[in-house]
Image (cartoon, rainbow, N blue to C red; front, side):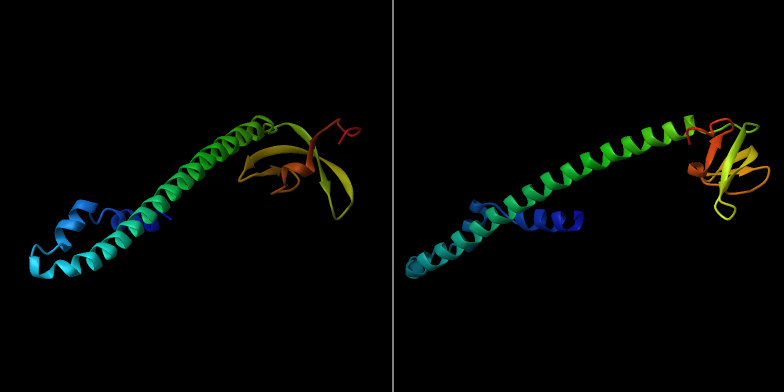
Length: 140
């Protein structure tokens, strides 16, 4: 999107109406009949430049909106990660983890939390939604 906007900026900044007129008008009175044709061509070029400028402005606004959304999402992610880290069980905490193969909760002690999983004294790599504080048997 940035490259497309840069391309449109370059096209739009090729020259102003006066630059186009000065570059294309021939001051020869013998060629005065062709001025009308050239003027129509210039008007078409100017219309295209205006269209491209409007397109660039629209894309700039869209890009700015996406960047604002990105900042908001990044902030929400940071807040969520902070909330998760605050809710982690510290090493040494007695917990229970749910064993899918045994279909029951098993007592364990937290050894560490890393890479989004718990390492317990009886099992490594347990995801947080399968760990609860020991004594929470009635609510989890």
